Image 1 (cartoon, rainbow, N blue to C red):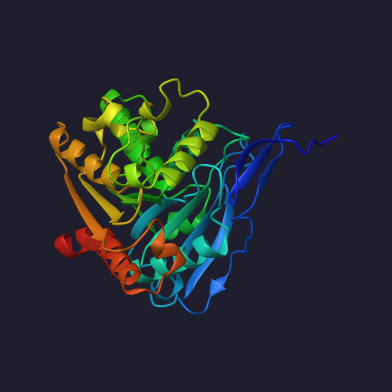
Image 2: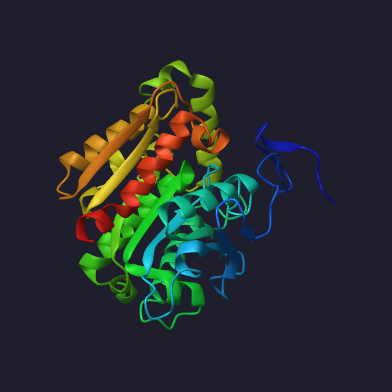
Length: 335
């Protein structure tokens, strides 16, 4: 018998009841994969792991460039973007209208293939489940490096020597950790499959970072900080150091210099409570022994995830334009 007693109330986002039941109050609407006439992008849903039935992805291809206009012999493979959605590790899916529409636009503008990962969510599956699922998704992507992987679209259209990982909010946090795991695996040779992909860059859109000591906007927006701290503890109850756990506070992570790509792009929103954390992350990367380049683009007067809530605004359009150019810079430089 279910209980109506609330253990954790994060309204208007979600509630957790004492019997373990989770009531998500947002991000539950889904749309099926489709051919999007506005962008010419085709999508489908795929299973990634038989041992983890909850782990899947929505795959996107830009049909006008990859299918309709080229024969098999002349078709040029395009970059592959692996995307991790936000939602404090607890909310949203790749199948929500907001993320589905955004990936349609991004794939169309960038002329890239995208894999939008549906990882297991907290609190039913606390961290590190989302990290482990995302790592498994990258391994699944790498299985296509010989052109004989389980998904025909990746075999045919994706250039696995031009792989990017990206995410917003909690997804940005995940993308950061995938870059670290990839770099560490390359150095230690603990995962043979990492040689099957070339991770060119990481894009973090207002990533979810935190720390025990408030900084910047966290001091003035204490209500939002309190919400994020609570959601972090819900997502990762095993974090004995609270918000100074290396999973949420990069400043406490000794592995930063192991970032496994040459380029990192961070999108910051001026009014975002985590703004200073994201600038600090940039400084930490620069001061570490990592030899790559990091760029920050800040949107003045904007708040967290503005690009998803108002995708046609000038700032969102500028964010998309920079995102796309980052994905295609290797194309421009090397032809």
